[in-house]
Structure formats: structure tokens, C-alpha cells
Image 1 (cartoon, chains in turn blue, cyan):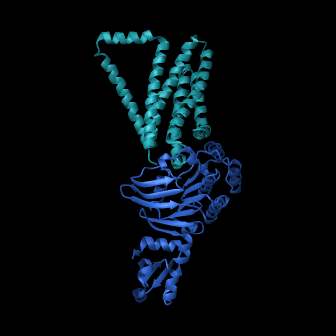
Image 2 (cartoon, chains in turn purple, orange; image 1 turned 90 degrees about the horizontal axis):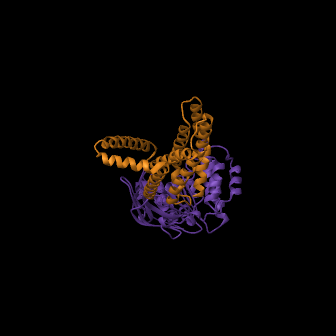
Image 3 (tube, one colour; image 1 turned 180 degrees about the vertical axis):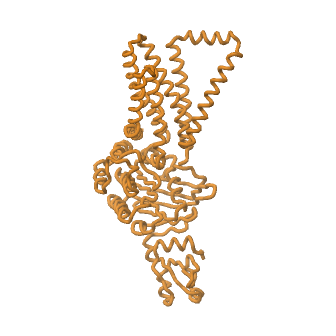
Length: 283
Length: 221
């Protein structure tokens, strides 16, 4: 669906260097702190900005070569953007019907009613949650094969976030050849949704891993100075100095549990992994 | 392009309706008070309303909507085409209403005027509105709302200076040149002048469209 090889985008004080791939039938996450380069990656993939090097292909085509028909196959949500606030939902329905030949008008209206989205109210008067839901509904109701969702859950409360994530799960269940690229800085959103995840920090991809692998095999070792000295460092990805000694990130949790029973080994989660990968010292 | 046209039509209904009714009301009140002529009514409604088209770009910019629009199955070329088409259609609509109001006032005043002269005079106003549109659209696409205001002001001052310089320059031209220029214009007659204005407007619109396309192609979101 999407392939990015050695993409380079230079700004005055920031450089993005990124390679990643979104396979058919998979949900791929892109996680990183604010300003890490997630939105720049999306904008490059969508042809909204030019880039200085590398190759980007969506459906096998460079962004500049994407035709109207290709765009119809994509559902896009950009966290910082949406329909004009001076329009109402009843105004955007004919717009969506005109730009997307496969727009499911009835389903869109039904889902709006289900989520309590008023038809006759200016979008600028909507809550953040309502605006986010409208954008996601617009993206999933025109038979798109590929969703590109940049921070679709930012600023939402837990309940609304779960609603949005459920919509995405439902979208994937309808057709297993569909794909989603979703970015977020909220790890719990991606943990329960994605098949694989890319971690971006300072404009660079610092980790790519299958989500199951990450949750089952990664672990956090908590060792004092003496235990740390004795540790086999071969499977340690990152180390951070702590008050009690050292926190160490490993992708071989089982190995350390079996061979170092006196060392605390905690199960990995996305938050810990990103904290260690972006803040720790790489070995 | 159809989707974008619907969007702007809806914006027009939501936001432009009040402006439009206000323009009609103000011009009619002024006319009834004897402070404005029927010609003023047509020009006022048509030209001021043409500004609304440029303001739809501001609505597109609100909340970064621009960015989202460019992710729809819409090309940059399609966006520019739609803005020009919407501009033409909305000014034509405003012109028809303005002309109807102006004609009613004209008949009420009981003045006698040749129908074609009146239509020709009114046609000049829509050409002026399109010239305004030709300047505003590329400026608005190139610059953000605040900057665009300053650029428009600079362009207005530049036009005034140009006209002033031209009027000063005429006194330095040989009499024969001025006379032949004047006789050329009078020789054109009303129809010829309208045609010449239409050609100038077409040239301005073409130049504006080409530069708007160029600006949009290079725009970074």
C-alpha cells in the first residue's frame, strides 16, 4: 500500500529521514512525541509537501502521480485539519457524495446519528471529539482501501477514543485486504490496534517491530550497579541511569528471566519502549 | 470540481447570504433616498459581491481546511479551476440581481435610456468585477489572509500612482498622438469600447489564471 525508502525532508532546524512500509491487510502504527516527524511523513506521502530525497510510493505510484481514482481509494484524517468550520454536516454530505463515487450516504448519516453528531450545526461549534468523529466517519464511509490517519484521537477523552478505535476495527473486519497507517503519541491507542509499529524520534525511525513481538518479547530490566555489571549486554537495546541503578530495555525478556532470576524483569509496553529508545543510551 | 463547487455554494448560503441581502438593502435604501443612481446599484452589488469569492479561500484556510481539501480526490488544478468558475458564476448571479434592482429603479425614475446602452453600461460593471477577481484570487492563493490585505492595499496604491503618472504624462505627449488616441476611442463607439474592455478583461483573467495555477502547483501545505 505504502512504501517509503530513504525519504529526506529538510527544514531549517529539523530533518526527517524515514523509511517504512505498510503492507496489505495490516494496521501499521507510527508513534513518536510531538514534533518527531509524524505529520511530515504523512504530508510527504500525500504529496502535500515536496521532499528533498528518497522515494515514496502509494499504490505503487509517487504522490505527484496519484490520480483522482487513486485518491478515491484513500481515506485520510489529518489531526490538524478538516472541513471548514463554517459548514454543517448536512453541507458536507453532498460534497462527499460528489467527490467519492462510492460514498455510503445512508451509512454516514446513520453513524452520525449513532454518535450524536448533529446535522444542522456549524462544525466550528462542535466539540473536539465530535470533529474527530466526523473526520473518521468521512474516511471510512466511501469504500477506501487504505486509511492514512494522522493523530485521529488527539485531544479526545477515553470514551471517544474507544469509539474511534472501534470504528477502525470494524473497518478492517469488513475487508481483510484493507490497510491502515495510524499515527499517535498515545501508546495505548496503538497497542490494542496495530499489527506492527514504527517508532519515530527526532525525525528518524528508531524501531520497527511487530506489536505482538513487542508486547510479548520486550521487557524492562531493573538492575542495581552490581547486577548491571554481571548482565549479558548482547540483548540489551538501551540503558538508562536511574536512582536505584539502571533500567535496561531488552527484546529477549525470557532469556533474562531464566538466566538472571535475581533481577527484576518487567513486561514491555509501548510507553516503556519509546521512553527507553528515545531517552536511553543505545548499546 | 463538482464537490468543491458544492462546498463553496454551501458556504455562500451559510455566510454570503447576509452580505448579499445587506448589499441589496443598502443600495436600494440609498437609491430611494436619492443618494445613489441605478448604475451605482448594479456596480455596488456586483463588484462588492465579487470579493466574496476571494473570501471563500479564507474559509478554506480556517482550521487548516486547505490541507484537508487537498487530500480529497481533488487536484491543485481542479481547485484553481473551481475558484475561477465559482467566482464567475457568483458574480453573474449578483450582477443579475443588481441589474434587476437597477432596472426597476431606472423605470421608477422614468428616465429614458436606450436598452442596449443600459445593458452595455451594466456589462462594464461585471467586467470590472472580474478584473478585481483576477487580482484578488492569485494574491489570496499566494498570501495568507493578513498579508493578502496588505498586498491588495499596495496594489491599489500602485494603480492610483499609475493612473496619476499616466495623466501627468499625457501633457508631455505630442498633440497629434493624443488626438489620434482620442479619435480612436470615440471611433470605437459604445459597442467597440465594451468589446475592448472585454478583451482587456479576458487578458487579465487569463494572466490571473496562469499565475494562480503556478502558485498552487508550488504551494506547500
